[in-house]
Length: 75
Figure (cartoon, one colour):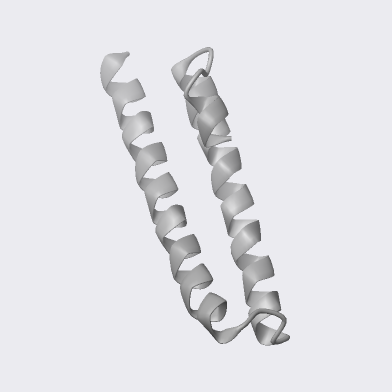
Protein backbone atom coordinates (compact mmCIF):
# COMPACT_ATOMS: atom_id res chain seq x y z
CA UNK A 1 0.00 0.00 0.00
CA UNK A 2 2.90 2.37 0.64
CA UNK A 3 4.15 1.80 -2.88
CA UNK A 4 0.64 2.35 -4.23
CA UNK A 5 0.33 5.55 -2.19
CA UNK A 6 3.33 6.99 -4.03
CA UNK A 7 1.10 7.32 -7.08
CA UNK A 8 -2.04 8.43 -5.29
CA UNK A 9 -4.44 10.48 -7.39
CA UNK A 10 -4.54 13.23 -4.77
CA UNK A 11 -3.14 14.06 -1.35
CA UNK A 12 -6.32 12.63 0.16
CA UNK A 13 -5.83 9.39 -1.78
CA UNK A 14 -2.17 9.28 -0.66
CA UNK A 15 -3.19 9.65 2.99
CA UNK A 16 -5.96 7.06 2.58
CA UNK A 17 -3.56 4.48 1.16
CA UNK A 18 -1.01 5.13 3.90
CA UNK A 19 -3.79 4.69 6.45
CA UNK A 20 -4.63 1.31 4.96
CA UNK A 21 -0.93 0.38 5.17
CA UNK A 22 -1.00 1.39 8.85
CA UNK A 23 -3.98 -0.87 9.49
CA UNK A 24 -2.24 -3.76 7.72
CA UNK A 25 0.96 -3.22 9.71
CA UNK A 26 -1.08 -3.21 12.91
CA UNK A 27 -2.66 -6.52 11.91
CA UNK A 28 0.77 -7.92 11.09
CA UNK A 29 1.92 -6.97 14.59
CA UNK A 30 -1.06 -8.87 16.01
CA UNK A 31 -0.16 -12.02 14.07
CA UNK A 32 3.51 -11.71 14.98
CA UNK A 33 2.47 -11.62 18.65
CA UNK A 34 0.38 -14.76 18.18
CA UNK A 35 3.27 -16.53 16.44
CA UNK A 36 5.55 -15.49 19.26
CA UNK A 37 3.11 -16.50 22.02
CA UNK A 38 2.64 -19.97 20.49
CA UNK A 39 6.40 -20.45 19.99
CA UNK A 40 5.81 -20.89 16.27
CA UNK A 41 8.79 -18.66 15.43
CA UNK A 42 12.32 -19.08 16.75
CA UNK A 43 13.97 -16.86 19.34
CA UNK A 44 15.82 -14.71 16.81
CA UNK A 45 12.64 -13.84 14.91
CA UNK A 46 10.63 -13.41 18.10
CA UNK A 47 13.05 -10.65 19.11
CA UNK A 48 13.46 -8.85 15.78
CA UNK A 49 10.01 -9.00 14.15
CA UNK A 50 8.07 -7.14 16.86
CA UNK A 51 10.69 -4.37 16.93
CA UNK A 52 10.69 -4.12 13.14
CA UNK A 53 6.91 -3.93 13.10
CA UNK A 54 6.83 -1.21 15.78
CA UNK A 55 9.34 0.82 13.78
CA UNK A 56 7.22 0.45 10.66
CA UNK A 57 4.13 1.60 12.57
CA UNK A 58 6.02 4.69 13.82
CA UNK A 59 7.15 5.54 10.28
CA UNK A 60 3.66 5.22 8.88
CA UNK A 61 2.12 7.31 11.65
CA UNK A 62 4.71 10.05 11.13
CA UNK A 63 4.18 9.98 7.36
CA UNK A 64 0.41 10.27 7.73
CA UNK A 65 0.71 13.16 10.20
CA UNK A 66 3.11 15.00 7.89
CA UNK A 67 0.91 14.45 4.84
CA UNK A 68 -2.16 15.69 6.71
CA UNK A 69 -0.36 18.82 7.89
CA UNK A 70 0.93 19.55 4.39
CA UNK A 71 -2.57 19.10 3.00
CA UNK A 72 -3.96 21.60 5.52
CA UNK A 73 -1.11 24.07 4.92
CA UNK A 74 -1.48 23.94 1.15
CA UNK A 75 -5.24 24.58 1.15
